[in-house]
Image (cartoon, rainbow, N blue to C red; front, side):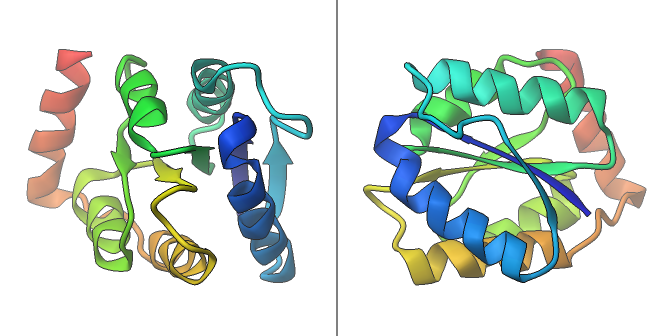
Length: 142
């Protein structure tokens, strides 16, 4: 599976931890922030555009609190994102909302929880069915 990641300066340390975990787990990783982006909007938009161009991919964006990346992602039509700091939310947002991007804050989420979020998010396929109505509604809003 292809995973896309990006970060501003404040999220870089957590991004690197997650990147190492993804590579160790055998994922193909596309890193849009080998060097930190000047602003969280830039890194999130780079990840979001890549995800929209590659519908089979999933991604992670990092900043200090996760909220900024989440707000930027929510302005991208066709992209469902979740600000996430726990494993259960990562699992459920993938399963029920077809989220393709998790936004995490390095000031909130520690390394062990971040790895757990990654594992839960990537382990669960989108369930579709009755949930597609919500996904379609979200897409119309952007």
